[in-house]
Image (cartoon, protein in one colour):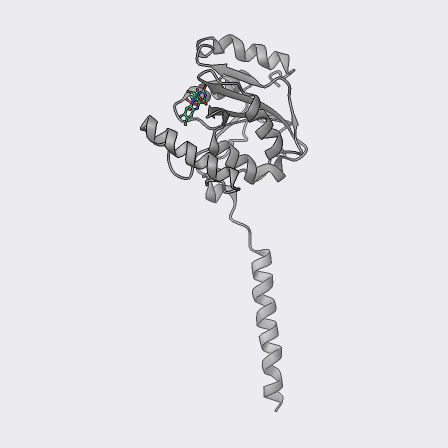
Length: 209
Ligand SMILES: Cc1cc2nc3c(=O)[nH]c(=O)nc-3n(C[C@H](O)[C@H](O)[C@H](O)COP(=O)(O)O)c2cc1C
């Protein structure tokens, strides 16, 4: 009889142990999931995060990074970008439509914490007038960690405006402060990046620390 009474108790203890085990086990960290992490080695309070398919935004991001001597992180899409331009256009159309339905395509990059940074630079290409989908996905997933931070937005495009994507950044990260103005480099600006980026950094009051 006593043994029978022990069974519910043992079941309860087993359940408790299993529950505590789950609660305490670390959530898969950014290091495990992502392909890149900020180096966090310079002690600099700025982080440049970018998405780029054909390299224009990457060039701008790297120029900001070298100018400020700060950390850099690339957002990689879950599925690599299509190399065929038309296929990429079609994919972007599908992904943008799916985001409108609340389904964000996966990205391979996460950040554990933005605690070490005062300003986070967010750079992306304009796709159909909007923020490129990998950056939308990243911001959607990380917004709660960015709360209270200052964000400086920059983008590259053929010629389209940055305005819609700035509103998207505001909506995706409602608890951040966006620096004004955002920087847009259109295809005709790209060759003048070397002067346009330092001018912009000066305008928003960011200097090398
Ligand atoms: C899927 C896709 C959609 C694009 N849509 C636009 C657009 O609406 N307006 C525009 O001016 N440029 C558009 N572009 C051009 C890119 O914004 C531009 O080439 C940008 O600099 C690419 O940046 P990246 O080299 O960092 O990928 C588009 C490019 C792609 C691949």
